[in-house]
Amino acid sequence: MTGRKALWSAIGMGAAYLMRNKSARDKVISQVRRVATSIRDKKSGNSSNTTNNNY
Image (cartoon, rainbow, N blue to C red):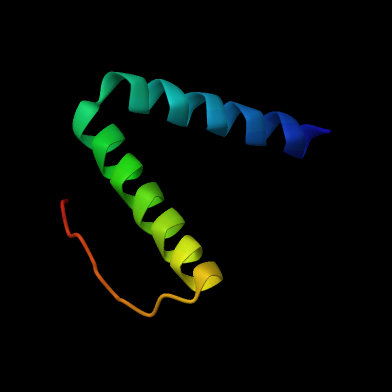
């Protein structure tokens, strides 16, 4: 139970940090989009490896 509280505390603090820091939020969003695109391309069979380094 203590581990679960610590996990939720860390998630809450991370969310609060991202709400206040726009550059960090934009970086996380771009990384999530890149991973989602990569997963989608693997599922669809696309082998195009386009990367977008906007950080």
